[in-house]
Image (tube, rainbow, N blue to C red; front, side, top):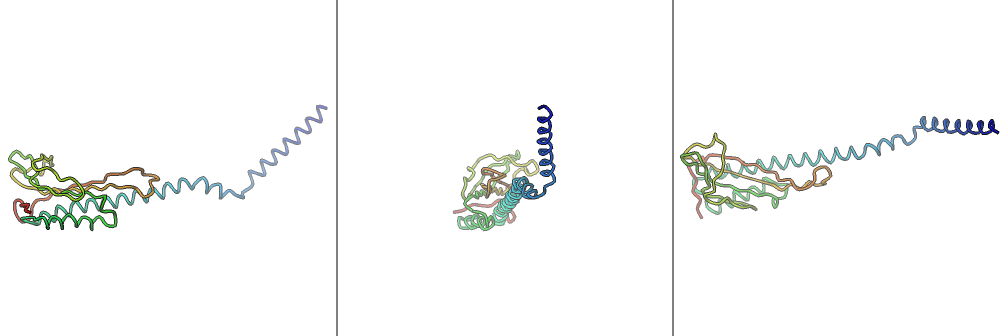
Length: 191
């Protein structure tokens, strides 16, 4: 009886080994298995690169917007409300094709006193909060030339990734730039 059980056990083991060997040699469905394992990685890379590329493009537009509002403002000797409205509304065209509603722009004139400390002379905004007149602003030391004026252009954008698969939540992309008035030492802000 022991010999019969042993032969049956050996036959069963041999059949199991043959099945495993046949399974190991089988190549049908291998591509589907590999694809199913790689698909999440490939989707993450694809969607992640799309989201990062779009974020970089929006950041570039934010930088261009800050530069444009400061540069346009610096070309005046006196800015009226209609001029400022045109300058700020130009930022909507610059940020396109992205939503202008998510853009906040602030343009301010800063007065640098004899000690090199800058404070706000006037400030205007689009979709944001203007800086209060008299507010002290920290500027780079290289720009703290006593008794001068600077135009500060600031832009920020609330970026929501399209898919939110790799980058999630709202990212605030922002930039600022300082320029000197071009036509006069300071720019008057009129009604």
